[in-house]
Amino acid sequence: VDVGGGYGDFMMALTESVPSVKHCYCLDLPDVIADAVSKQSDNPDSITVRQTEVTFVAGDMFDPSTIPTPCNIIFTKHVLCDFSDGDVVRALQS
Image (cartoon, rainbow, N blue to C red; front, side, top):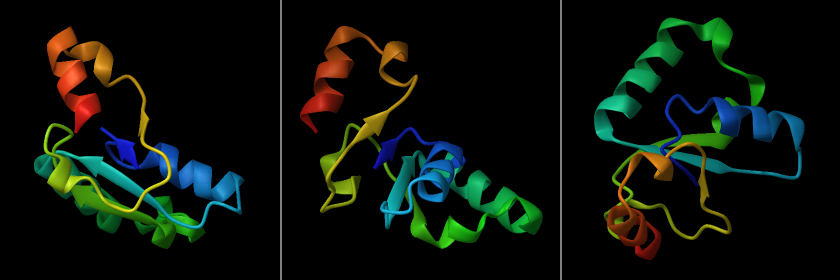
């Protein structure tokens, strides 16, 4: 699960370059996911062959019920640095 995954670029690149990765989730806020899905459908040339292996999930990293399960790895990139220490602890606990 890529938490704060935006438009899913990292997960699509991951599934493309590492064939053993069979499925990934891109989790972000509902408005970001809606925009990502809209941009994907507006520009079919940007959709990779392995895009079906990336599922976009509207959720909130502070709400564990919105994080897809089961998952083996939770990935964050340039996300936690934007929050206070207390919020980071809360996100990691969820």
